[in-house]
Image (cartoon, rainbow, N blue to C red):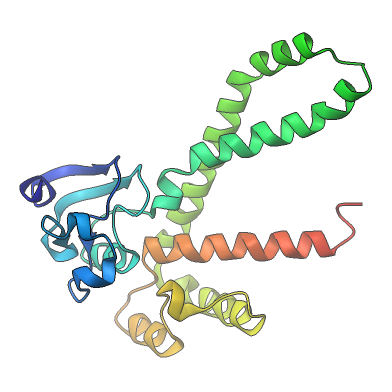
Length: 215
């Protein structure tokens, strides 16, 4: 397994349980996955061009960030395996919408089942579209490099001021670290942008609920 993790390849894909890559400055004890301590490698030992995390926590977040800064292309597990969660979200919303006509006798149980079956392909397309747009947002943010760093810094500051974000917990750079990176021509890494995107979505969700939009 260790040889596979260190192999030179285009893609390393995680599809099972376990955390197999950590940051070089992290200890195995910090990872919290004793079952794989013997085979785990440091991010600096990766020799792949890209990493895909179909499983949860195939890498530690600090491991992802280190790998990204070394040129490995990767997102986070939340991005790479989000289609399953997104499918469940759409399914639940559809079932909620259908609950009223079923309760009122307008839609029978067999007709409901048939309707859900007819929606399968459309749901699949919606989920794929959502996930495509999500990764596109990350790609555009990453492509902008340091030109958007000031905006991203202000976003982190705003979320912190609201008590919605703890940069230390999420391993996001401090203001001084952002300035240092900018001076070196470096922006936020893709794994960091993925976390920031998630918090931006959560903040927008809260803003929408507090507005008159739901009404």
